[in-house]
Length: 223
Image (cartoon, rainbow, N blue to C red; front, side, top):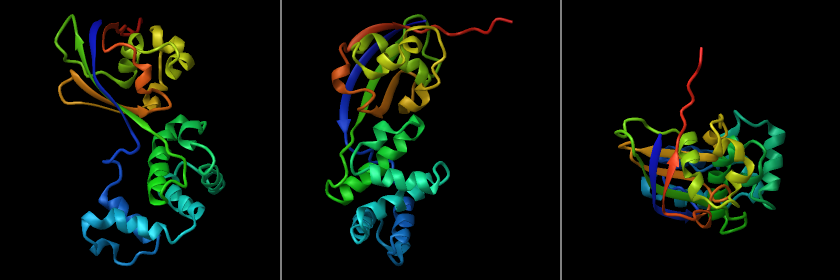
């Protein structure tokens, strides 16, 4: 299927503001020994959390937040190793399991802001794009894999996704890694999409065209 892709905007951000909820703040405040967190005014929860975190050593705070979000995915040794590495490198870009990159980014940036820059500052990219079918109505909601493959012609050859996943990006081949490379993909009309990923995978400079066409091959199982 042929599509017309229009990049409407591409922005670099250091935080996804909707990620942490008030419930997260309350639970984290309790872990940082703040009493009666549930009784605090909702608008002040984030600042209260930053104040509570500042009473702890940065590595200790990192362990607490990592355990809160990733205890089901990482063991104690892995959590302590990451808490040490977070001071030196952008673990949310370099950790071998790319499925954890998104959560590690949100943890890193919470700590970065709480400690006024003691942790490395990572960035995310948010792209809005119109992806219109040239052959039919936009009845099909595109997957992360579909969107990445359609974006390929509008990206520089130096883009990390294209370099690491060249075959999957340019051939009718499975691309399961797309689920982790793109952190979030939303649409309300199967036409206008919002794409969120790490600046590590895709930055504004990687986009070399604002309007281009793409071909999406839908694999058909042959019995």
